[in-house]
Structures are given as C-alpha cells and as structure tokens.
Amino acid sequence: QVQLVESGGGLVQPGGSLRLSCAASRRMLSVKDMGWYRQAPGKQREFVAAIISGGSTNYADSVKGRFTISRDNAKNMVYLQMNSLQPEDTAVYYCFQDSPVRRYWGQGTQVTVSS
Image: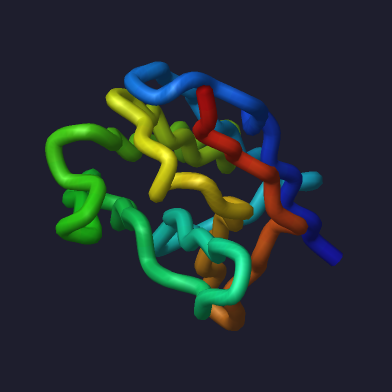
C-alpha cells in the first residue's frame, strides 16, 4: 500500500513563503496527475493546483501567480511553492498522486498564515 507524506507546513506571516513537499512511501510507475487540495476550517476541500505527467499545470484562480507546482517523477514527489501568502490561505493542505488504478492522498499538513 502506498502512502503519501506531506511536509513543509507551518506558521508564516502574511506575505511570507512556504514550500510543501509530498513523498510517496514507495516507487510508483506511470503516475499521471499530481497535485494539491486544501481545506479551511468550516469549508469544503478545494482544488489548489495540479501537474500532469507531461508537465502542464493548472491552478485555482485564487492562487495563480503566487503558487507554483512542480514534480520529480523519478522520486514520486510533488512540490508546492507558496509565495505572498495571505490569511485566507490558512488551511490543511493535502497532496494527491494518481496511479493508473486509483488516487492516493496524503494525511495533510497545516498551513497557518497569521501575524
């Protein structure tokens, strides 16, 4: 069974930056989409960003120009560079990776943006 583990969350001041990482517990072949969702308190989980195997990316409008997603296929890792963070970015961030048969999710990492 593959597990995804996120890291890099924490407390940051408005305008600051964080880089999230998501690692798979073992090598997976033919991973298609990788990406991130987030869930703020009292809200539904929402899409943040995704990157397909060829490198094309897609972002939620709320993070365009501030967040950058990237991946390392050899290591089954996906990253989210978050710049110009704002209080409304506060949420638990979940990564996902799509194998040919199912989507795997991480357990989430907390990002808190506050002064």
